[in-house]
Length: 95
Image (cartoon, rainbow, N blue to C red; front, side, top):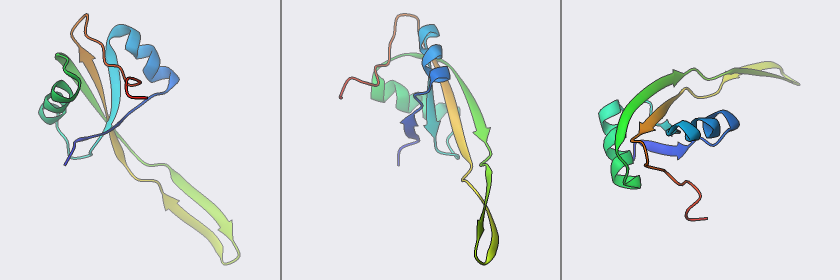
C-alpha cells in the first residue's frame, strides 16, 4: 500500500515550491523513512529533509428535522518534503 495519498496543491503549498519544498497528504501511520523512500522512488529526486504534521478533522454540525447532528471530518497527516537544490518535482507532467 502506498504511503503517499496525493500532492497538496494550494496557494501556500505552491509558494513553497520556489524554495524546493513540496507538500503531500500521507497515510496517518507513515513515518519519515517510508515517505522519503517512496518520494525518491516515485519522482527520482534526492530528499534532504521532511517535516510531518498531524491534522485534526474539523467538527461539523447541521440541523435536520430530527434535531442537530454533529460529526467530525477524518483526521489526517501532511508531509513537507525538501529536495536537493536543483531537483524539481513536476506534478503536472502527466496532464
